[in-house]
Amino acid sequence: MKLKREDLQAAADAGFIEPAQIDGLLDFLGRRLAPGQAPGMARFSGTHVLYYLGGMLAIGAATLFATLAVEAAGMPALLLISSLYAIAAIAAAAWLERRGHAIPAGILAALAVALVPLATYALQHVLGFWADGTHAQHYRDYHRYIDWRWLVMELATLVAGAAMLRRFRYPFLMMPIAVTLWYMGMDIVPALITQAGESGGWFSGRAWELRKMISLAFGMVMLAVAFIVDLRTRHDRDYAYWLYLFGLMTFWGALSLMGSGRLDGKLFYLAVNFGLVLAGTVLGRRMFAVFGGIGIALVLGDLSWNLFRNSIAFVLVLSLLGFALIALGLWWSRREAALSARMRGWLPAQVRELLEARRTSY
Image 1 (tube, rainbow, N blue to C red):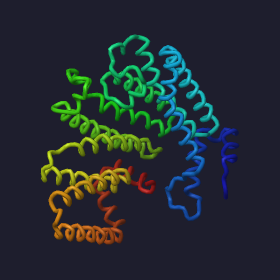
Image 2 (spheres, rainbow, N blue to C red; image 1 turned 120 degrees about the horizontal axis):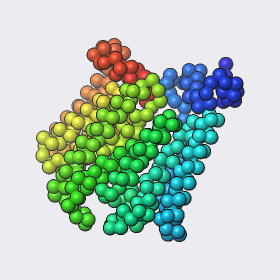
Image 3 (spheres, rainbow, N blue to C red; image 1 turned 90 degrees about the vertical axis):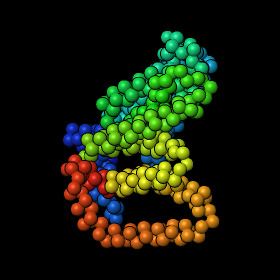
Image 4 (cartoon, rainbow, N blue to C red; image 1 turned 90 degrees about the horizontal axis):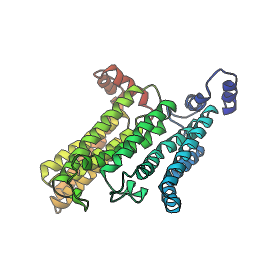
């Protein structure tokens, strides 16, 4: 039996299903009915590529649009046009949702959220809040410089993102929310310590060390929030993906900038990255393995260059370690089902359900 979008659209028109369920049902039935396709493997077609490419271009054009609008007509016009642009994006998202086009509807809803900091920035200028701001003349500086004044824009974006997510239940809406949280993790230090200078003071001395510590903690909080979201939506779509990604960028980036070059610090960093790889294996999240793998490669490369530059023994040890990991992988593959079942038995029921729900999706 082959189902087409037209069949589900007819069912929606007859009132048997909601129009917003069409894309989800197509993906679900496609995974179950497609011959030779692995269970749980999501489809990603050329249509999806065009959807996301067009959406990212539209979101990225906001900065260029802001620059041209300010140069042509000033901040009041920017406020008006960006607000109308966001309203039009919301209306288009609702129109697409009613017709069952979930992916482009989610992209346009995300575009509306991405326009919120632009409209807030223009409103701040209209109200005179940026009169003394060093980086206040160009909206593109929001993506280039770190300043505590951006926090108002970020908070407004988070509020708007939460409201849009309540109305449009699409995972792609988590992307602008996650990016905003990432920016906030960088801007929160200038908000806490305002006595730092404008001429690069944040990249030296105590302020730089504090920034790394706060970024590390902020990244860990984002990862914890992502895991909670993952648990709460384990039977639904994947709303945690973008939070995991930008949480990892914040946490791993800050961790990678820390350290005094001592061997014990490098070994600790190596252990953390092995932990990321293990977490990625357990959670079924490849991005953890990517970040962890890069960190492991950085440490091993540094050790080989600085401590064992001329040591054949180190090369032999690395080779033996690599072969041992391959052998461990072969041993694990033969016992994976039994070992995984035994380890999952030690976990809480919610975590077991999460692993089972996400196991075949990554």
